Length: 329
Image (cartoon, rainbow, N blue to C red; front, top):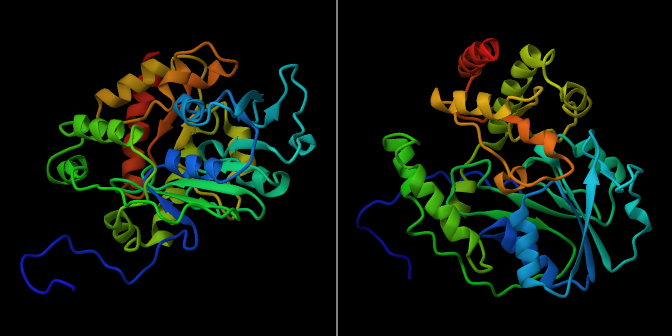
């Protein structure tokens, strides 16, 4: 029976709906991946070296019989063999799964035109629509203030009896940032990340579903794109990723996670300077960066926030700080 009366909870509009309606809901990206693999008959999976090491580690733990074959990517972030030749995933048999990352949300055009019967990691590209015949996984937490949340689009029959994720103790960092600031509650954010990293496969919490049903997605996407284009108009001459960005950012599905700025060296120095000045740029895949991997030059990428919380005035502030540190080094 529905409760009537009493104190108020958090008020959120439910007049909208989730963006990925029709997709399966999970507490985490890794849970979605595990449920996909558990309900398939793949014997091997091709995974890029340039990826979050935790994803591969999760597969090794949960599916020790699944053979993992690593591949490299070229400067356009497209698959290649170890000798530098193009990797043709179309030659793989039906029991082989090809895993590809939509890096920084810049490879949607490539996915739409080239990939078929693959697993698309869209953790960096929430607004990219699933491409027919591909499995596609999204992370809600990378784009919105929710305690948990991921989506999986696939034609496979998935588990339908998963327990719901319990997120009651996972709101301190979200509320703390609103009430005070991000720095003070960063440790709470890391505690939640650690909890989710070890969480069992669960369905998305109802609270996250409610939040994700209250968002004006078109407004969110347009703000991100506007901020991205503004930064690119100013940083294009010095960004070593400019050609890649220019080829990618006109896709109808373009939905950037951040603005990726790659300079010659000094990435860590610039990143630290920005953080010290209150501009929190993430270090994606820290454990990858610390390893001597083929794409180690990408460790210098600075991921500038361009999300829906900010406007062009904020982007100008970021540019001012960035210009001051670039002059110094």
